[in-house]
Image 1 (cartoon, rainbow, N blue to C red):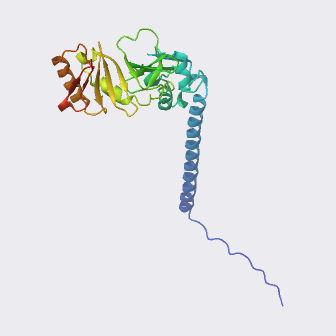
Image 2 (tube, rainbow, N blue to C red):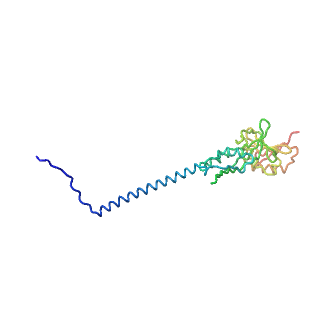
Image 3 (tube, rainbow, N blue to C red):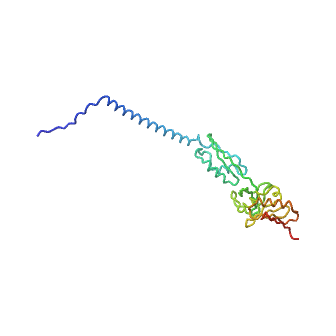
Length: 262
């Protein structure tokens, strides 16, 4: 039996035009892959370069300044902000830094602004005291219209209303029980206020005005204060205020005047 040899059939000749077209397609695919690869490299280079730029000294904090601070020191404001020289500008959370500064007792509002030159400015507005409260040691402390304790009295207290019957806590915290007295203070007309030496708060929250030269005005609960103060002003203009015991305007429609018993 003779051996048989199997051979692959010879490939059919390819049309030169088809072969040329095939080579052209392959070449275009290679060029497209190279362009995509180049684009990826360029993007990565730009992103990486930008990131490296933010880590260099070109965009870090070179200068810190504080504007508007009087009672709070500039250093306390900067410490509260948490921003330091050398920090990266793009890493600073201006909103969070502002909120931290506003926790300082005297600070009402704070804004943090960054400049491309590496400067950071913290601008603050401070609170305005309207009253004073005493502590157990005989000291007095400043309070703003919201009831926030600002700090110890320094200098002249002319124009500030003493509050009695409330005790201060820590600076930056609200004075417990002072809200009613402060609402009464805000409701006082200039004429009535000039006759008030202090505002007292009773344990149940009732409010009284200590009058000059003597007597008290009883407002009761700190509600309907505009009507009570208006009625008080009318009564004070109608009665002889010498030897006055007090004026009760708890119910402004039926004000009552009394005098000390002989």
